[in-house]
Length: 335
Image (cartoon, rainbow, N blue to C red):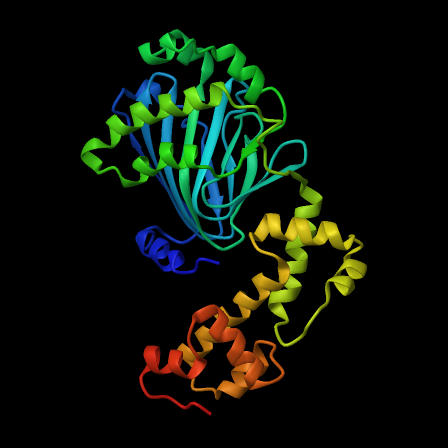
C-alpha cells in the first residue's frame, strides 16, 4: 500500500467540497468536440477532480484524481464510444454492466464501450486513485482521421468490434504502456495539448495490434468482489482478532483459492501481506497521534507480544516503533 501518495492527492483536492467531483473542461478544439459531458454526472463519498481536454474531433482526455472509497457515474450509453482508463496510482475497480468486475493497479489499462459503464460505480480499495481517462468516438474519429492514423491503416470499425462489442478488456502494466503515458503525466501545461494529440494517436496505434484474449487481466463477478469487500471490512474493523483464511472461507461460503485470488485482485496484495501493512499503518497513526504505550498499540492492532509487533513494524517501516515515534512526535512515552 503506497500510502505516501494519499496525502499528496488529499492536498490536490483540498479546495474541492466534500461529496463532490469538480469538472473542468479545456475545449481547445471547440465546445462541440467534448464527449459525454452534457449527460455526465458523478456522486462520491469523498472528493474528486476531472480535468478534460478536447484533443481532436472524436477524442477527449481527462485527468482524474480521487480521494474516496467510491464514485458513481452517469453518462450516455454510447456503444460506439471507446472508453480507456490508465491507472497511475492507487487501485481502481468497476462493477460494469452485466455483472463483470475489473480491478486495475498502477500502470494497468482498461478498454470498453461507453455503454458498459454508463451507470457504473468506480471503486478505490485503497481510498485514492489517479489516472487518465480517454474517450474516443470511433465513427467520428473515422470521419476526421488524423493523417498518421490514416497512413497506418487505422480501421475504426475493426477497433469497435474488438474493444466495444464484447466484455471489457483489462491490459496489465507494461513498458509499452509506460512509454505512452509517462510523458502525459509529466507534461507541463504549456505543452500538454501537443503531447495529448501525439500520445492519443500512439495509443490507438498500439491498440490496433492488441489481442484482448491473449493479454488480459483476470476478471471476476461483481458478487465475488462485493463479498471480498465484506471480508476486508471484517478484517480491518477487528484488528485485535486474527482470522484464518479457512475460517473466512467457511463463514462466507467461498473456497480458499478464490478468496485469495479475488482479494489480491481487489486490494493488490495477498491477504497476509495486506493485513500486515494495514496493521502497521494503523499503528503509525496511533504512534503519531496518541501517547499510548507501544505495548498497548501492539495489542490494539493485533499483536500478542511487543516483540512480534516490533519485528512486523520494522519489516514495513524500516525502523522500530520507538524510533518512528521519536521522529514524528519528538520525545514521547516509549513504554
